[in-house]
Image 1 (tube, rainbow, N blue to C red):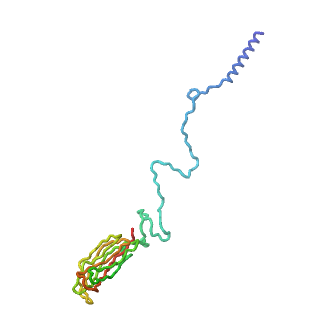
Image 2 (cartoon, rainbow, N blue to C red):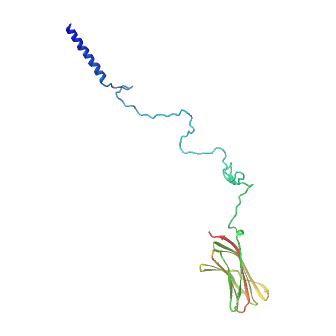
Image 3 (cartoon, rainbow, N blue to C red):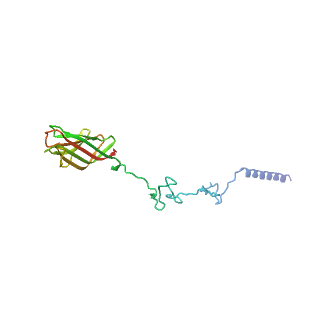
Length: 234
């Protein structure tokens, strides 16, 4: 009896020890595939928006942006003189309200004419004087030159023309041969006129001159006339 009781106590102690060991030792987990202690695999997760977003755009290649409807661009909502053509996408002028355009270099906007007189003194073959000096900021375009000479009877006017002097540089332009016109107030009249295309920049002195075939006598006179237009210097 005593030996049985002793064996029962020993068995109870052994079972208690097994229970303590079972609780204290950590358990090893196993995955679905049966491998032990495997780390979870990282995967890309999808994010879904439950409500309806106000902006839904995804870029794919080059973007093209368009405008819904017909765009209208005008200077004045009540009087559009410049606007887009809805059909051809071009800018056009309203025929009922044309746009004013002016050519500022048109000769009609800046006409110019000048005249000067000279005389032949006794002993001199040349007569002449300054016709004009081109204003600062302007360029003079000379389109016509006319010279009229009144010389003593029997004399002739020769080689009329003008010179353009800029910064000490003198350029001479001669007209065609003088034509005898007849006698007026005791003088033989010669005229030389020619269409030209001469350019004189700001500050240029325009000088008219004419010769006669003799240096004898006093009282002959000459008239120089130029015409053209002015333009602004670039």
